Amino acid sequence: MRKSYYLFNPGRLSRKDNTLKFTPVDEDGNEGQPRYIPVETVDNMYVFGSLDANSALYNFLGKHSVNVHFFDYYEHYTGSFMAKDYLLSGRMVTSQVSHYLDPSKRLVIARKFVTGSADNILKNLSYYNNRSKDTSTPISFIEQYRLGIEHATDVATLMGIEGNIRQVYYDAFDTIVNDFTMEGRSKQPPRNEINALISFTNMLCYTTCLDAIYHTQLNPTVSFLHEPGERRYSLSLDIAEIFKPLLADRLLFSLLNKKQIQSKDFDFKVNYCLLKESGRKTVMKYWDEKLNETIKHRSLGRNVSYKHLIKLECYKLTKHLLNIEPYKPFKAWW
Image 1 (cartoon, one colour):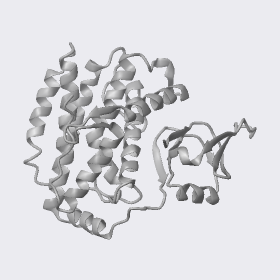
Image 2 (cartoon, rainbow, N blue to C red):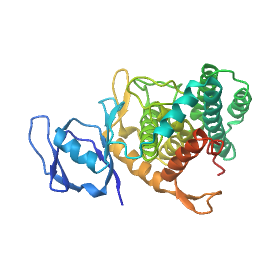
Image 3 (cartoon, rainbow, N blue to C red):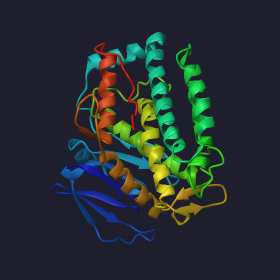
Image 4 (tube, one colour):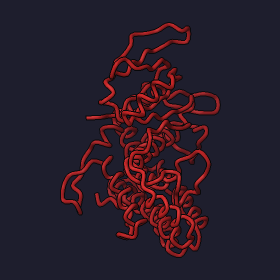
């Protein structure tokens, strides 16, 4: 079974036969004990420390369909090495672009992303409202904003509605989370523990969606809610809107309320707060567990993992773009 690997320390990555050799290197240039990773076990690599590698190594990774995602010191996603697309489809590309260029067709899809996000946000708030956390006021506000989604006449208006929903939702985090306060959303840099966790788990959700798109015929640079731009995989942002409440936010609530992540796991500076390595490792552990957790799928009648749910979402979007079946965003029922 292939899985994700996380490199937190600076080091050198090289090929040794059919194995990846990672040698940690400290700030004085001293090498540590190498670690050997069979390439056939690697799905994705997440690099948080400085990595020394050459083109031969990336050629090797590309041949084995291993994607590498990079993050800077502040834990911001900076880019990915994506193996060569192996599911290219000219028909899919032209259909995807035509739906983007047609304002009415684009609006239909963009509405679905905002609706799916709002529904899953409401499911989270309802869950805690039924467990002695009074989230009735934000629920009421978001339900009102949700009514405006179908009446939005352009994508800019939809983005405004989505932003309003998110603001109300984030205001409820102080009610849901024990022992920590959020005091509004802050990013680049995050000012406190909750904001640091939001940024980190959102980034994980974004790259997981990117990986799911890679395994379909969809082009990750052509999006419908978020505006496509230079050097970014904007379709991942669209799909992540649906899954951030289910994956990133639910994980955040659980980690903090169960005290699996504590204040000692954060590094506080003058103007920002980041996860320490201990905190990142804890989040990654439970993130992988969450992705592999299964639910009984109502339509398929079998258990599927959260990770597979994202891929299924990509397939549904593909069917819509090819005029096979209208797209319906995933909505949690639990």
